[in-house]
Length: 99
Image (tube, rainbow, N blue to C red; front, side, top):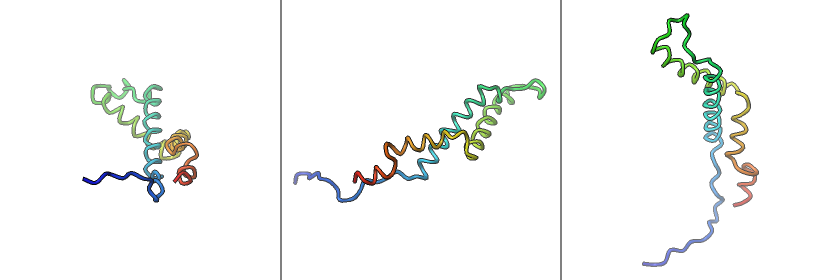
């Protein structure tokens, strides 16, 4: 069997897809916001609505849905910070130059 030759590729390294990174960052922000909304008591069952197991189970879904809407509308800016962190040091320009 011939030896496997490993060398440097003449092709630049594949850059992360901005759309996928932005979606991941937005999802992370939505998850964070959902936890904050739950912690603030938004998802707690209210006695005025009758309470019960069904209301308790759906309250978490409500907090997640509201958090996703908040994140889609721009959120608190956390998605942008996460997006830049996912791009790595220097962002896309740095990744393009290293190839």
